[in-house]
Image (cartoon, rainbow, N blue to C red; front, side):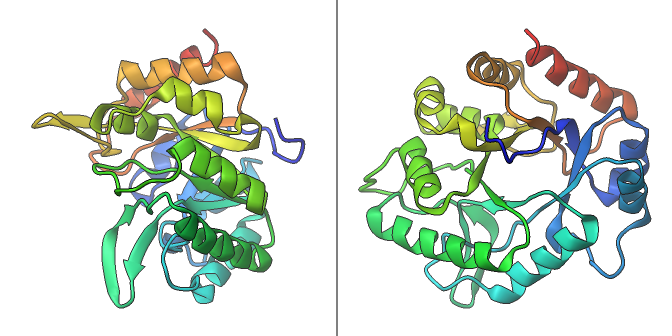
Length: 269
């Protein structure tokens, strides 16, 4: 484990729709969507969690660090202000692009894994790091298709990114499962290759099968196979934290508590 990475425990993604639920759950930290937080008017629920001593980690979704254009510094500065307002130990976004020119995808899209793409990503990450008051962690994404002519596997691409920028990683075992089912990638080879000592924390989310394709929805229960991958990860290392993501079709407090218990069981097998 990286010496500068704080110990986080087991957490959940904070969303306005379940703010009271999150306050009642037994969690050690939370993550919020940075673009949805006004740093001058922090939601009361997040202030309460901070007063209890829980770390609140801003997770951005729109920096488009893997896009061909230079990083939008206004978006990075917003993330920096949110981090400062929440006294966050780190912030995060994705190894992805969300726009090209004036076109906004509305989705988090994986970049081509080429030397040229890596060079652009590294430059954008370094520029973002210069503007941020805390370390930056980056999450690999779920994909439905592969770009042609890849020069790196996903784990190799992430390893190069870490080596060149000293960023941290969010390892998403649900994305890992989705890519293994939809693209035929090997999760064990990924875990054997990616620099696990640079993992800041882990994401766990639910999904659903539709027409032979696995969709990482964050709106359905976590599959046992995803929890198995979490256990496999913990057989190799002990990441500082594990976080449950839920973005839609929110279940009862009891169901969310049961999923958190399942995560705790998986990491102590």
